[in-house]
Length: 353
Image 1 (cartoon, rainbow, N blue to C red):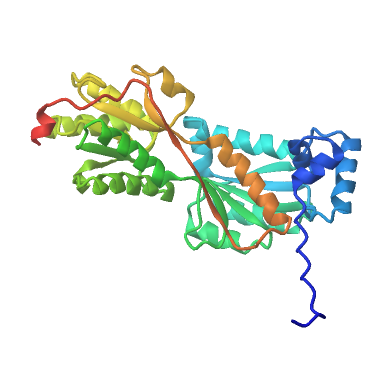
Image 2 (image 1 turned 180 degrees about the vertical axis):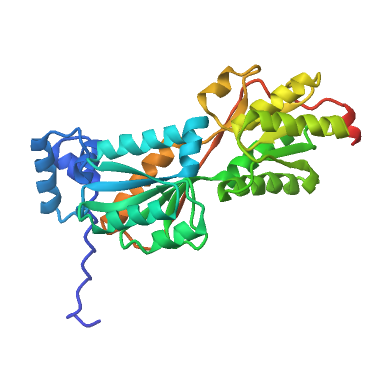
């Protein structure tokens, strides 16, 4: 062997946050907050952490080029804000996370094309605006205009079907699949899905309902899907009442794509003389606070609304700081909250349907 060839040197170990924390004598979370620019770290401690990171050649995050983020809220988001508060919790998450990391949120309503163009042009020209968050946007024309704004954009509670914009949503498809699986495990086979069509997020929930039924070899005909024109309890009440009047009780469970529709379903069943969950199980999606105070309290799927807002802010910061530029679709996990509106299926007329 040629004596001139020595052993290859070992590749230096990558510096980790734990190494910096140990050197400075602070917690890992303190290092993380200091390097990301969050509040709550004393200035002298922050400077010591930054010095230690530079000495160790740790790759410091690039500063965000701007101090403001424009939050453009669609008319659909504002209607939801007034009616059932889901948007309220998303906005709380956005506000709290932005405050923690020192970003100013400037909210702009976007109800039509003229307002959208005005908001986009203002954001494009304002050098302090680092990027934009768009809340509950589905309209393809609006998405197309937003893709060309020239600054980072993250969609919140909506997605870009062409994957040209990054987005944060709950995993609506798996959430509905979890809910349907939950009902199937309790013996239900005829499960109505009650929805308001129009948004891709709700179509994902419909797909999850179908996924679960198909995986168990259960029929999922179109006549098990009931639609209403708006997220109003009285509309759900009417459509369920009409079905019972025309067909009798040909189902044992209802999965409502929103909790306001679950409320209307329970009203219709009660007026028709059926009990929840003794005769029909009812399940909702969202887990808004009022769900726990229904009679009976509603079993539902918890949608992490605050976390959606917080994650949207973090994702936009990452993009602004130079993280990989490929658009990302971030979906957050959901989970079931068990209460008293679901029970095992009993032998009844629906079994014979």
